[in-house]
Image (cartoon, rainbow, N blue to C red; front, side, top):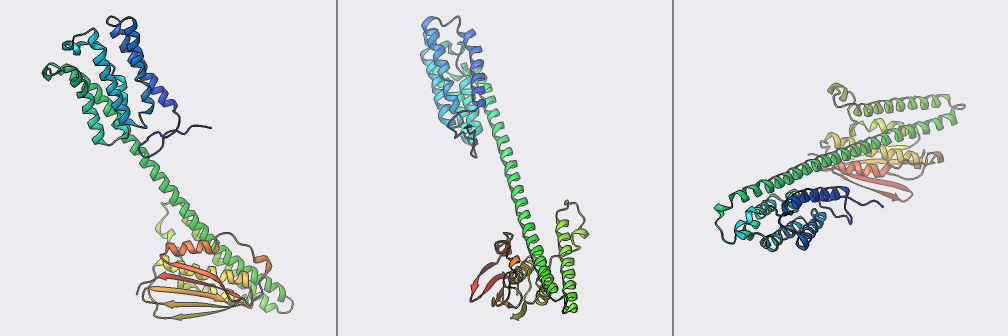
Length: 400
């Protein structure tokens, strides 16, 4: 099982193990520390004290593995680790008054820990850590001496520590930029997925309605082609008309998939159908043997284009389901109720038809896709069986 690397908004490592980058950073820092340790202490420390100093310095690199999990704690611990080295090892061979001329003090661990604090913590905390890192060794070793004698040491330490802090802040800014780009990518993927769902719903509404009506007319025409050729011809005309309309709507959807630099004229060639276009849905269903009555009450209000389109799709999906599952001989009612700020669509059937068995399949979008479409338009929808039939009620916002 692979180990998980860093996660979380602050880039903090919450995994039970360590990454290769952790080992690489710690080993590189240890190598840089040794490059200063051996030349500086070769003439000053020897024997057991030299070994103890080496082991003590090496131990200070172990907490660096946790620098991104608990950056402030690791930084504070390593700052104390540095102070203990100065207090207990430096006086053995050097006078405190000459402490700033001591050729060695462990610093790499503090630099790496400070960079982690600057990278993973807010600006105020990281600035506090920087000031502490510069001042703490001075306070430990000066023993009340005037600071004007320590300017060289303070300046040198400030340069190194300031560089580590600046590097950490640079990493933090880059992380924020990367997180911002990742969030933008996730939003783009969500938008693409939403658009795909929208197109899938559109395809379902267009294809399901057209295919259902065409198959009903084809089945009816086949039954009467010998006894009533005129009705069979009318069925073929409806099939042609519905197929043409479906082809036009599919062409509109294909234009939506074109690049964004498509001209406005192309985008506006085929406007979205709205509630005023439902008669084009009703006539083919009626000619297939489903008796559809339309009833309207109240004063008609104004619908936004998206709401009008949602209303159109509600009627289309309802009539498609009635044609598919109830079949010819069914009595259906489309009831439009206009209220001051609401349009209610009540669509029901009596379940008295003869459904075609081969039309019972479903694509998986259907009513669930319709529910999402209505909710996006700011409305609500409910449906269910009623007596032998089925009803659907949708509430959509309108303007007075």
